[in-house]
Image 1: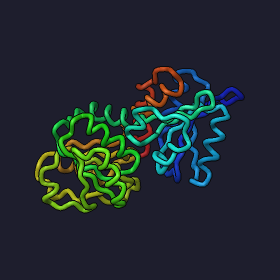
Image 2: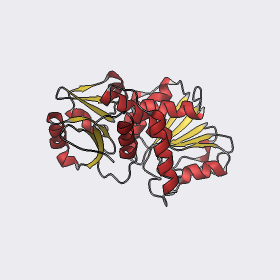
Image 3: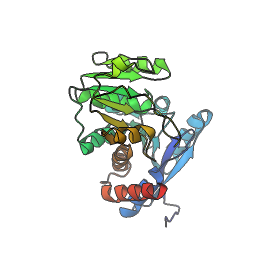
Image 4: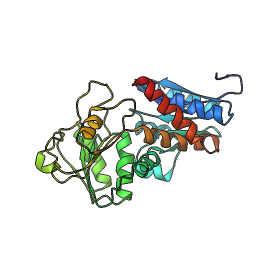
Amino acid sequence: MIKIDGNTKLTGLIGWPLSHTLSPLMQNAAFAARKINAVYLPFAVPEKALADFLSVIRQSNFLGLNVTIPYKTLVQKYLDEISPQAREIGSVNTIVVSRKKLIGYNTDAFGFHQALKSARINVRGKKILVIGCGGVANAIVWVLANQKARQVLLTDKIQKRALDLRKKYPEISSVINSGPSPETLADIDGVINASPVGMQKNDPMPVNLDSVARNIFVYDVIYNHETALIRYGRQRGWLSVGGLTMLLYQGTRAFQLWTGKNAPEKVMKKILEKELRVRR
């Protein structure tokens, strides 16, 4: 049981809305394992209250926050400093409170990179379709570019987001319609879903892949259940990876930034896997 007293430090997740998250379970287990007097809580903060909320945490006993939809880009204007990597990526998903200053970092990129390594996915020289161009996609495409992907196809229901992301990587990226043609998909090597499609168990596939004849990989950032994309990929015999490993490693990096201590990775992984088994 978590013991809370006047010295307890606070961390948490801000977003709007917060429909599901395993981060409190993971981070609270990590604090307990390292015997740190801290707690991690979800904070559903509407946009009109965001500035006031961040002003409060600056003056209180917060170690920091994680940031999720829809604030990974918007939150940057309220920060005192942004790490060079997060500025280059254009997205902040972790805030550290230090001497009443709010410092923004991106741990999604580390999480995604570790997820690729864990699944033994090599994107070098590959053609990748990325579905959804919001905050997390900024980190994903940054990793793909740094890992020397040959081409990245970007698609989003809000085309402006895809066009804005393409501007950062004009040499390797291009924007396609949200319903890509069979010809466009004929030679892809992988599909990454960075959109919210799949968050609900009855959500459809984010893209029709019936025309894909070659062996590819599929990756979905959604982690709380097996999505239609992951289920379809496994039925086709493709390497199919959900977002749990990315969640784990972005969380270990955030823990290190907040506490200055190594994260208890095995503890965090074990409790995530246990919870998902229960939910299924």
